[in-house]
Length: 146
Image 1: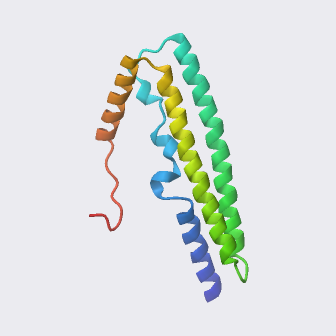
Image 2 (image 1 turned 90 degrees about the vertical axis):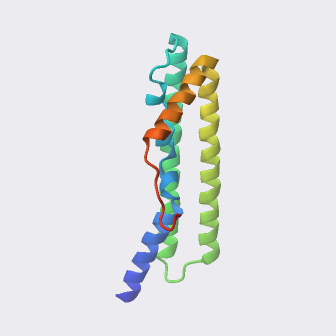
Image 3 (image 1 turned 120 degrees about the horizontal axis):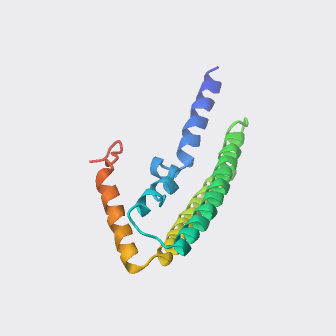
């Protein structure tokens, strides 16, 4: 019973931590352009481009969710064994970190694509909208943070 509870606790702790820190869980939500584009007058061609951009991002997010789910399941399966392979677990965590890094680069590339669709005036308005949103959002404090 003790071993089972300890293993369950370990699986939960690892499952929660290897998925990434809380802000990394849903970074696409923080960078969603919908409300950020409010007040920016877009041409019909720009609207079509933004719609296509958003659909592509949605497909990418779904694929990333499925990858994260598979990674967590592989870790849980290994931890459920009587003798988990430490090297395999470390490799799984390394693969998670590589995927997370690639996803972050993908998000930035997507934002650069959106940025390229806008005129300089629209970019300035987008930057202003981002600054306003940052001011309105309360800062998160982490345990142990000063």
